[in-house]
Length: 341
Image (cartoon, rainbow, N blue to C red; front, side):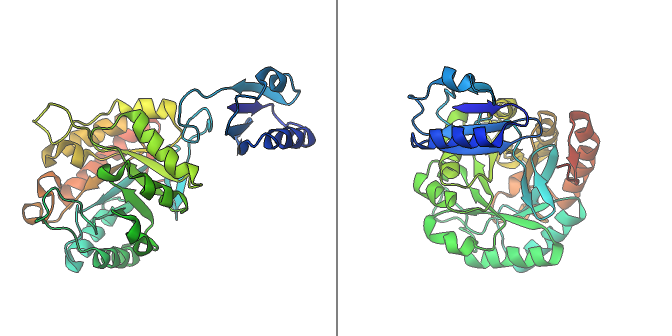
């Protein structure tokens, strides 16, 4: 349930309302906007008399949230969530570029790519330290060493870092990581999501390859229910009958998620299409659709990459894409490389 208060409500009346609701064991989350204040109620609200609350002088409107996700719901939080990491903002009209190799392979490799990403307008360095692979014989990543190398790259370039966690047991290794990524395979690893809910680090939550939009939002709800509201939703392609691309990029999810949820939405065109030459057009399409950013695989030598070289673009191609995005984004009301909120 959501209670929308009138402008400049009487503080004593607001406190009395909150105390009354608290006596019914209802959790109250207060969201203060530019024009109104919203009280989001979580718990068993079946016994709450809507008409009684609506009749109060301080109340503008009362709405029941029918969807099973509450905290991730835009009705609960009308304004866009903006996640701030240093001087980088994700959401709320800011367009964020995350880029880097699928896997951290060596010190020389990650430092070289980090320099190129920073030089070409990137904001956040992505790189896999732990790599989930279909084959147990494929390269599994440098693990803890990979995180150390990402941290070194951050020190040199100033880029924030995002990397994927695989298991609860690895949490301690992620203490100095800026954004923790939850991959498609772990989107419904609910025990992991609960633990991440105890953190306050931003979580990049990727959509499962066969998951619905509601299932993605319910996974976000697991994190938020634990107290961590710094969640970034990521569309990375879903599995369909089509074989021309690795997956099918569901750009229709962007307006749906934007209408349904207040959380930032970023697109991973690299994993979606699996073909480097398609990444450029799908990135521009994602920006035009209203997404809040991209997470792109960039490698300085894709032909010899230890993981997903076929979908990785070169630093030069990334620079060209960033330049074209700077022309496109003002048309859709967003800015690249600037912070609006």
